[in-house]
Amino acid sequence: MKDIEAYKRKVEQEFDQWYGTQMKVSLTEEEMNHVKSIGVSVLQTRDGGMQGGGFVQAVVANDLSGAYNRADSTNLKVIPFYVILKDHVRV
Image (cartoon, rainbow, N blue to C red):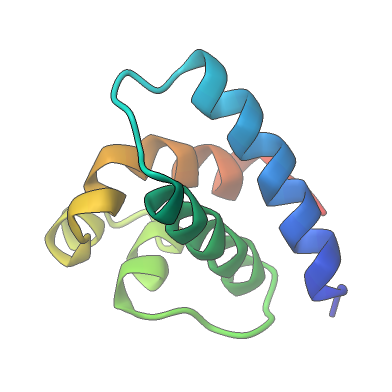
């Protein structure tokens, strides 16, 4: 399994790029940290590392209804970011 710091760096890089160009609403610093943490969990779950919770499992399984129904108010705003991570980002 890859180093957790490698995942964190990659998610930080991808989030900064995505948030600067795609995000239409503002997030607080706390929300941004939450999104980055969940992003790491998405990548680790996809890559067979530490398995995330129900929301992350639904994202990785491409279960839109499950992800939507399990998302907190912050994650509802950024589901597209997690899909980009899952489908296009490699660590």
